[in-house]
Image (cartoon, rainbow, N blue to C red):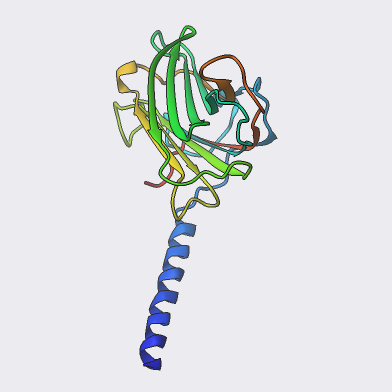
Length: 215
């Protein structure tokens, strides 16, 4: 019996080592841009970021997010915004999470909301805890998915290795050329009105230019 227990423990230990080693191997390289403090008015242009990455037409951004539970019944929406130049059909993409526990994407053009997609959380969000939002974006000029454009988000706690809180993606291919200048910022807004409770704490913005994570 003791021999069986030792064998089980040995197998379990080996699996843990394999999992941790794999996670290390596929982890993202050092970000091209980093800033700790982020305000709602800040915008960071991709064209001003230098990189040695070669995956043209793609980027990744992540940040730390902390928000207390709203003390009012109105719905709120928080996350990362992507500003896109010289496209007649879309100039702003909001992607993030809502106070009623959904992942959400909004496509905007000329101050008008064009499309919305929502998906309920798959795991529990802890209000007041620090969590991570990570957004990946590629346009039709990238080689891996040539001719296609897409944006996706992961919302998770810790490393996210053992499960996400929420995820969402949106195929942008029908919106045409998205390869022009882009900038990244953050947002927090009321969904039913202009009233917003506490402004979230956004920190530690990281940007990888010309880069797509392992998938």
